[in-house]
Every structure is written in C-alpha cells, then in structure tokens.
Image 1 (cartoon, rainbow, N blue to C red):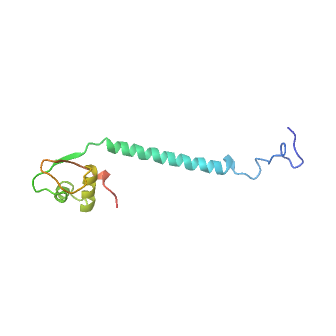
Image 2: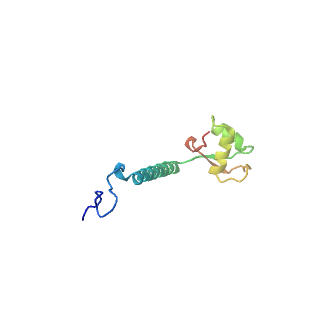
Image 3: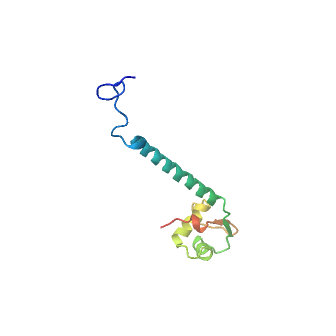
Length: 114
C-alpha cells in the first residue's frame, strides 16, 4: 500500500490523527448501551425477587372495608396508597368486599413510593 503526499494510506484519511481513543462516538454509544442493559437486568432481577415473595393473606370479615383492612393490617401505610396497592394486588375493580373473600396484602417493598 502506498502513501499519498499528505501521509495517508491509499488516499484515505489518517485514522489516528485528531480522533479520540476507542473510536469516539462508537465508544460512547457502546458505553450507554452497556449501562442500559445493566440497568434492565438489575430491574428484572429485583422484580423476580419480589415476585418470589409470598404475600400475606387476609380473610374478609363482616363489616370490613378496604380502608379498615389497610388500617388494621398495614399500619403506617398512607391510606390511599394502601387501598390502591391492595386493589392492584388482587385485581379488584371496585372497593366492594364480601365476607370470606381472601385478599393478598402487598409487602411494603411493593407499595408505590412518593
């Protein structure tokens, strides 16, 4: 391969001159992709760990409402967040409860954060 008078091989730009190490933009793109993949893997791992945890079960008694269940069984949880979490955990479309109905109570780690 011959060099041109400007010092380039076969008339192509001199790759090493004026460029950042590791390919410039490609290196940054690769780093961003690696970070995104790592974050996704960490999120899936955390979700799988939560999914494996057994929920606490509560059997509805006469006179119970979602609000009384949350107040009694999930102390310290903000009422609106607790009711929402119980409805989501049990796939409820209304707040109506029936005596004898079993409710899965979400763990604190699964409650929405403010």
